[in-house]
Amino acid sequence: MGKTTIGQIGLPAEDIERAAAFYSEKLGLPLWFKTDRMAFFDCGCVRLMLTVPEHEAFASNGSVIYFNTDDIHSRTKELQEAEVPFMGEPHVVAKMDGMETWMAFFADTEGNHLALMSEVPVRTGE
Image 1 (cartoon, rainbow, N blue to C red):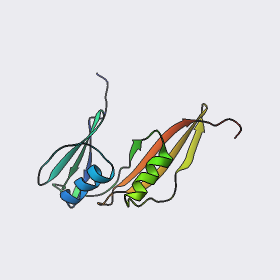
Image 2: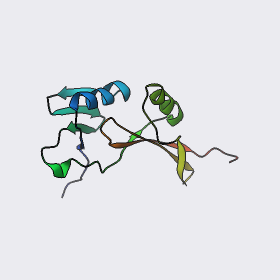
Image 3: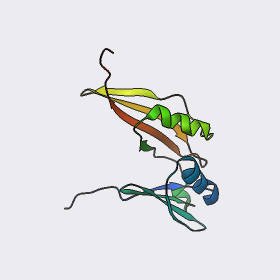
Image 4: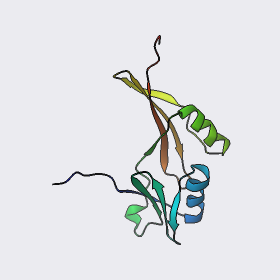
């Protein structure tokens, strides 16, 4: 059996225009293409698909997508200035092997939960 990787993540959206604008204008993700029911974004090696659910079983918001960033504090401030509502400030969630994992949680216009994450070396003297 070959290696398994994530090729695409799908998120439900009630309003494709509104959702696509959030991901392209607020988060700055490159839009590949959009139809009346779907929008696809380039997220490195993973494709993000926003879609009006074809069946109610796919309409719930359940997964959290974590976006890597080099500077979580600056990126959070940029998004807050773009009126993206955060659920608190960036904070450390784990320290291991000389690294700190930082998170900052927010939501998109469709109620999907998202987060910024950053892994940085532990500062000496702390």
